[in-house]
Length: 88
Image 1 (cartoon, rainbow, N blue to C red):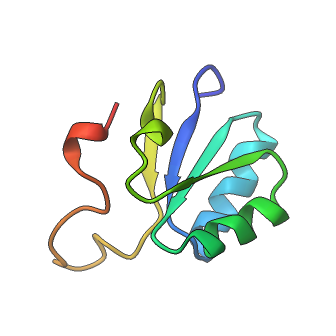
Image 2: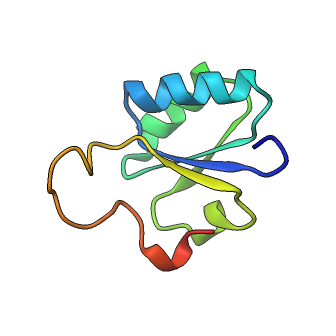
């Protein structure tokens, strides 16, 4: 994982915990959340995370993996948090 950036979707506690563990392992983390201020809060707490706006396709360029830390998927809630065509 450390060879390519990882896109982390979400802005809550799960995303914060994942970002912290991934950065400790040397992984470059790109945070994407529908509420930018939440992603910026994580980036302020976890050094080395980059913040991208929701819908910014550049967040996914060259990414090695995408982690969904949003509530989507917990139940049958419909569409994924990003369009499938932007995934690496």
